[in-house]
Length: 489
Image (tube, rainbow, N blue to C red; front, top):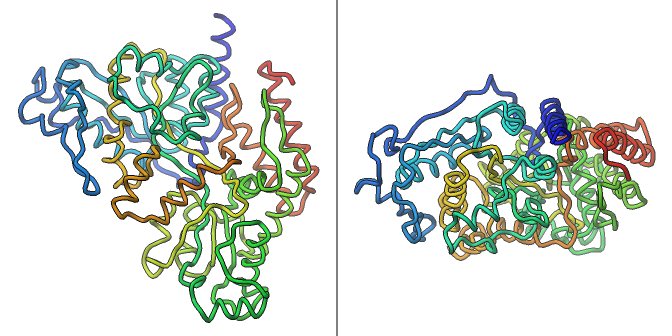
């Protein structure tokens, strides 16, 4: 017990010191966190009504994308939780609005009060760490899925497989989630967080240019090849060169390729290629398998791609990549899937295509909902997660920009005539044989692994060290960090 308490303290301290890399996007700085605890009109605490009233029964009905939805299957919520209160943590941006809408409906059906605390990207990490160590009140949190290992290494998350068996609605569909996402938040003992949002590195390209007959003919004349959406690393390099004015003065775009290069983001560029060169990031017990010939080839390849983008590549984060792509100056970029609405807008609306990252070994990430093992409201907490992540419950959030974590809902969207190319690329990416999680969250150490890997990626891309030295340094520092918490290889 004493060791467990010590490890919990180490985990909290590491997370407080580290940055939460999230879906990989570099979020803008925000002011001090605003703790939003707005209560819906239908909550029992706000209205004084102890059970679901006639006016609240409509909360179970919803419509999205032409589907009639039932948010209370079997009528399992009937106001029985009146007088109870849940505390939920989440991040600013695309998370808070859809989660608040789920809360509004849940309060009306359950009778409970749910207080949502919304924090900036970095502050959320600190708050979660404090709560899991027992120093802050929190029942449920939305967190980066890869942190499951960090949290669960000291038993800080509740076992949701057990809670669903004890308190859950019998028809809750565990099999509807993407396999890659659910595996990331599970271990041999069960599921410890339910997937809430999928994020993945995708390719976004100028569909209008690749379909232009004149450009197709010119590409064939200059390269001897047909112009198609790049699938392999060789094809990407050839096409990026053609669409770069530095290589081809007749190019209709200034740059052929662009990806994120700011601190804590540059690493994803070569990690997205590692699988295509035959490598993986980590083996059992966090052995550094990336330090291999495949790792060397992936790093050198992605350094070569920098020549097809702007010279100040290291100043481009999530938003900057989106803006340059949306300006029409770039033929193809790689960014998180949530970038699509920003890119496919304005003058570029309808001109952007989506694809799996060339090499077919994409970096993926995502956010999940988990329950604090210290919470005294395990039943109510599970009922809320069950409600918000059910098949129909998830459909109500998609219109707010949150990509579905359930395969079945991706198919429902395509059947409804939504952007088939975008959702096909998401499905194909998640189905790749080799995927790599973008958040290097070491047991007890939080995001320290990501910081180590990105630091040496930056140095290698800037020409300070070789790929071999960068990988050796990454492995050495990660091994040292793991040994500091008792993990030896």
